[in-house]
Length: 142
Image (cartoon, rainbow, N blue to C red; front, side, top):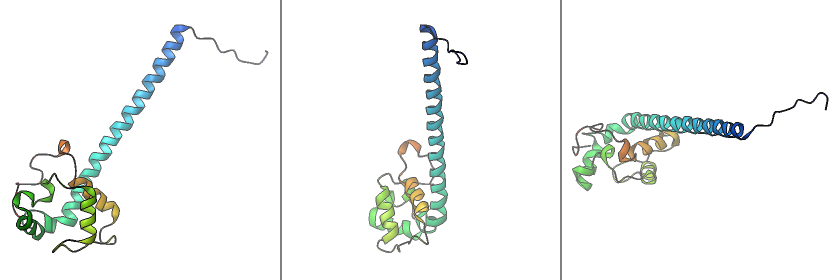
């Protein structure tokens, strides 16, 4: 037994303290990961908003051709895409790629999948993260 380090045996209190320390470390790690995911998600939605305004806004913000056409087809209450709560990611992506009525299709060169994913996530964001008045007045034209 010469040369071997002896590890002291922990008593009941020592094992409990070790277990608590491990549990605390796990909780802190999980909190950091979840907090980072929330920040990352908020950042992605903000990026989606920026991309929507830059890539789609010409037609789909108030006064745009897309909003005017949607108001004629679906009514003013469903004409502003930013304010709709009935959109689904798959639908936004499909319509963007193939077009519909007067809207031309947008290929992956014009609008990469990574950008379209963020735009679709922004347009379909849950009500819990929607700000009030972020998209301007309701209804209106494009």
